[in-house]
Image (cartoon, rainbow, N blue to C red; front, side, top):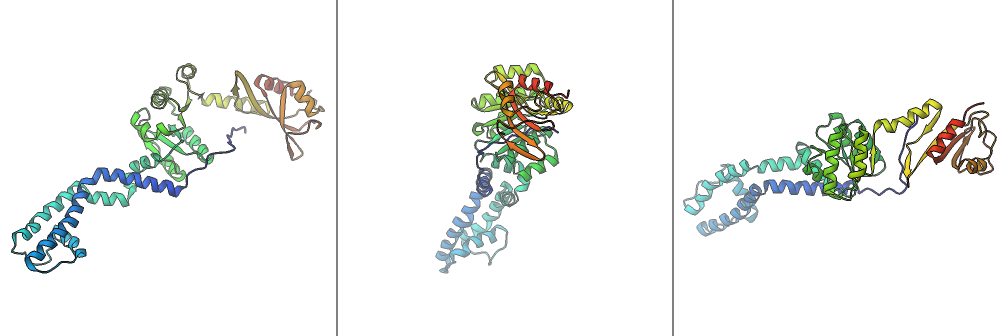
Length: 360
């Protein structure tokens, strides 16, 4: 079965998972702090500052010193109505006894306990955690639409060593599980929203892939992405050919692909016994790479590699025979029937080679 595999020779090294996790924890904790800083600040002032003041006033009133390490604990006792001793007669001391319980209720009501619980159980804040992880990425690839196609793209990029962030308005549980195993953060929001794109780190990404099954959604997201980051590389999945042409012309989209376009060469090649890669366009010329088996009596049977390359304006990059394979075979090598060849040439020339490679 023909397939296409993209391999980059010198892929960028990924940051260590430990360093990334630490940065994500820092950012997530900073977000938590911004949300809960008031009750936490009040709690620290009461336990530390209030404890110190109570100890000093207690020494003035009784002449007995309370150890510094015990003063915060004493404030905690008063907050939960667990009195350490009978109520003192001094008004400035009894004031602590009556004020600390309502202050404790205020702190709890404002969410100090929630902060502690969520800090140690980030699973309850998965969305915020994913956003914190995504915010640490630089020069990454953003994939909008992590369905069957988007998941395969994400998996391939991850295997190649690239950092990936996914965006989807609603992802299937099994997809979320796989992305989690791959270490790919997923932003659960509408990818057409500037907020979602910002959370995915669009300003710092190198590429944006619009991979949903809806052309209009992809188009809206591409327009927003181009507006937020004029220099980002954009790849789009499209069904409508008219949309494809407009995207290339007006939105500076580097590649517009459709499942049917990608699959067509594979189906056609399988029908005639060859494997054809997706055609690439360079300087106005289409090029293709194919693998075929030399047919008995065809024009290549009994001819040297050098002659075939010169006469047919093609490059034979691989020659296989009887289980052995030679990359960049010598020009003197004679091609025989049943040999396997991998040929690179202009697409029209490739089609001519396929057509002429038939048994007499």
